[in-house]
Amino acid sequence: MKEKRERRQALSLTLRALSDIRKIVPGLLEISALHAAVSAFGPFLTIYLSARIIGELAGQRRPDVLWPLAGAATLCGALVLLLGGVLLRLRDAKRSLYYNRDNQLFLKKWIAMDFSDTEKAENRDLYLQIEQNTCWQGFGLSKVMECFFELIQELLGVCGSIALAAGLFTLPVPASAGGWTVLNHPGMLLLFALAVAAVLGVAPACKKQEMKGLEYLAENSRFGNRIFGVFGCFVSQQQAEAAADVRMYEQPEIIRHYLTKNMVFGAKSEHGRLYRGKLGLLGALSSGIGAVLSGLIYLFVCLKAWAGAFGVGAVSQYVGAVTALTGSLSGLLTTLEELRGNVPFLRTVYRFLDIPNAMYQGSLTTEKRADRSYEVEFRDVSFRYPGAESYALRHVSMKFKIGRRLAIVGENGSGKTTFIKLLCRLYDPQEGEILLNGINIKKYNYRDYMEVFAVVFQDFQLISQPLGANVAGGADYDAPRVKRALSDAGFGERLSSLSEGLDTLLYKDFDEGGIDISGGEAQKIAIARALYRDAPFLILDEPTAALDPIAEAEIYEKLDTIVGDKTAVYISHRLSSCKFCDEILVFKEGEIVQQGTHEALLADKNGRYAALWEAQAKYYSRG
Image (cartoon, rainbow, N blue to C red; front, top):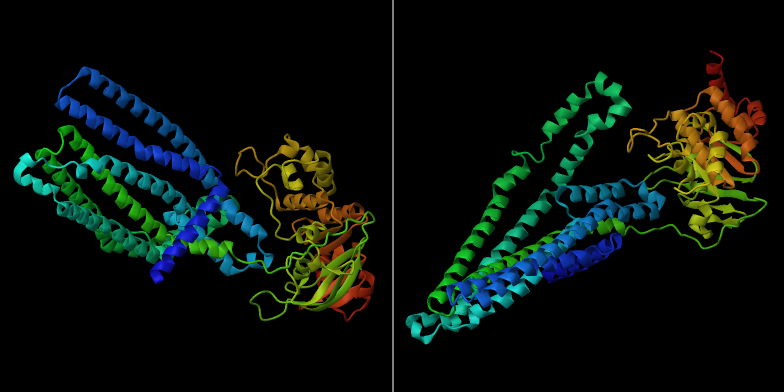
């Protein structure tokens, strides 16, 4: 019963994987099947025509028969080679495309997944397992793609070899052969079939045990790949970013120690022990049994030919056909066993891809108001991160309207960034509700609602693409608008110095002509990206952390003009930036402890804001 259930699950997961592969690269499976068909049937044409030629040469040697046969063999061989070569190139091109695109399936899942799930360690670990399984033995979707070609080729090989080998069992030994007529007895055919079946049973059994061994080694192998992935190329990967640390603290010596200590794939490792023992013996047994089977085939064919059942030309046909039959059957069973052994790895793939979305996506369209009249309200909102015991926000209530400048201040861990993530609906609160124009934000279409916000997070990301594409978030963009956004963000002077302008590639990952930018310049580009989006709400999480005080003052003076009728929300550790804002929220331990203008909060000498201001002011005064 358990065996049946496992077979059904193997079939179900493999079919699903084939469907996903087809979506990733349309036409890949069809081209692979055609190439498999040509690869399977091509040799049989050669065997058949060669047998006819040998038979004629051993017999009457008629030129009018030999020349057409030789011509047909040459033509068919050339056509098979040509068609096989074309299909092989097409298949390899599709497969290369697959290996470039296979990660898109997982990338789409990461993007579609609830943001809270993207931050869970168990989900990240699940994805790492998928990557490492693929890198180690090609397990997962890649294994299904590879086995599909082999499966089609072996199936067609079985069909072709049966067609060619049929005469071996139907052509009788003549009565004149005396005692050799025993070869005609049905029991002889049965014995031959049993011998073939017994030998064929060994290969898949060996493969099954090998797959179990590989499954046993999988966790250790993933760890080995993780060690190598982190430390194997550490020096070259980190050289540009941390060259000084690498040299000053002799980090290569530490890395060498870990790589030497964790020789997961070495001769003395668990891998080496198993391949020297059980797994190695299984491979040798499978190969040895194959050689015994080939000997039995030759013996049976030669005995029937000796007894006069068929001519010498047919010997090569039947030997080739039966050898191909056993090889194809063995390959077919081994491939099926390989697919079944791949099931635990496919389970990992689909456990990740099937992570459900818990957040309600909503259906209401966010109103695109010409007057940009929006009001946001937090109504008794509390939030706790998944797995955390304490609340990051507790009973937060406040409201603000469009056009206001709002500053959010507080010490690290006080809940400032959490407040913004809830506002942008990266998370949903466990208690209370957040309203936009009096409607719970959960009721709005999720993507539609997010377009109301342009955010520069503290840990923003720029990519190795042209400057203009980074700002616009796409290859097609309004160039004058991008330039204006860069200028407003304080990057105008640097832009004018770039010979390639907006086409300048950021960083040198793809082109030595790319430029490296400082942290402050990257921050200006990130701010320009938010300005280009032209959303009603502009949210800046520590927007000037990498800028010097003069550049910071310039940014804030410009932003006050640029923001216009938008709502600007600033999270900042530098309280001097709060002077530009209409209202300030002071967070402490997940709660809003003060709210008001800079002057009003500063006047409250016993308040948290005044204490933070004084703590920073004494450092300013030391200049």
